[in-house]
Amino acid sequence: MLDSRFVLLGNEDNVFVCCERVLAGTEVCLEGISVALNTNIDVGHKIARYNLKSGEKIIKYGAPIGSTVSNINFAEHIHMHNMKSDYIASHTRQNKSGEA
Amino acid sequence: MLGYLRADGRKGIRNIVLVTYLVECAHHVAREIVNQSGTDDVHLIGFQGCYPNEYSLKLMEQLCTHPNIAGVLNVSLGCEGFNREQLTKTIEDSQRPVETLVIQKSGGTRTTIEAGLEKVKELRAIAAQAPVVAMETSELVIGTICGGSDGTSGIGANPAVGHCFDTLIEQGAACIFEETGELIGCEQIMAERAITPELGEEIMKSVEKAENYYTQMGYGSFAPGNAEGGLTTQEEKSMGAYAKSGSSKIHGLIKPGDIPQQGGLYLMDVVPDDTPIFGFPNIADSAEIMEMVASGAHITLFTTGRGSVVGSAISPVIKICANPETYKNLTEDMDINAGKVITGDATIAQVGDEIFELVKDLASGKQSKSEALGHQESIITYKRFDAIGPSCLPTIR
Image (cartoon, rainbow over all chains, first blue to last red):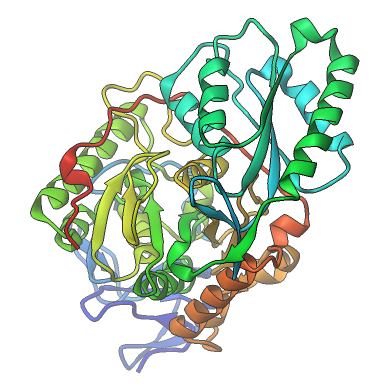
């Protein structure tokens, strides 16, 4: 069962995408497991579907969209701080992780 | 739908008199002519640079002979490097009326503006005589771009445009998607959709070129707002953007200003050839829209997550908003609320059908939001391209 505030875009994906802002500490149901989020998650942002190892490919839309740069726990926010492009570096204005 | 029939057989959905400036030095005079004309069917475009450039000349030629254009007034300072003689000849060859004012010979700002207003009045009188004829969906050229993308773009808006593209192509229209630099990571799946293996190879090469080009620039086509909106990498943004192309076969690979001669899906290669000499491929969304219009787009479908307010000179823009929160903030600028997909209030197909209906409404004269608000942005930059090779436009279907 998947919480209605998240969506799985491809069956092989290892990320869920947020459809409605969820605050840190909120319990959400992912893969049939109830878990409290440790950061705020904004619309459009990704969280881990499983525990992921450093160097693993992130799969979204059934396609690789980059690799993790550290171990990532189930339900943890996935963004600039723990994953990178396999093609070309991304840049941000204040180098912030995008966590709301 | 009804269209304005031009001498070359193409049909426009608008009947516009175009005023151009051929160098930034003529911009103010040209803009005053447009502003003082007191009507919204006189539009302004121009090229700011003084050094000549084949790409910008080609874009100006294609824009001045776009099917939405009834006649043109060129405003030149006089000494700039832009080849106004060739531009004038191209417009004449298209059997459109064209007038040129050279400020250095016209007595300065005020007298040139006055002369320009007279010319525009005459051009509008000619435009009013353009024959109005029936127009089919198969005669439309529709482009798509995305701007201010976020993590919602690839969920609602982009797949809905893809659905609309599938419908348009089934009915014989030509549809164009782009930006090879924003398709990095999708090259293999795109190549597999090409109608010939040779076209597939050209598509692979165009994306490799884009990756190489952006690597040399030091940035991908990835803005800070993309990251704030939940996108992390170029290839993630690409996968979301790619959904705009729908599921049709890819019929050709064109460059800016190349006009599809038959229906089908076309990828536009917007990244300059050779080593970078003029900087970033597209400096802002409006430069991408201008390239779509130069390739004949009657309408551009613009998807956004973070939000945008731009429209375009010459051809209207439909703005499709993927993010329900952005839609709430920018409702007056958004034509379509694709955020309904995320909130579970509509399917991708329903939003796609809504876009298709709006395309037909616009082609029947209805104004888009940005059009009604008076948005007429345009940018033309310096670029360098080789002509496309024969395998880019296979003749088989």
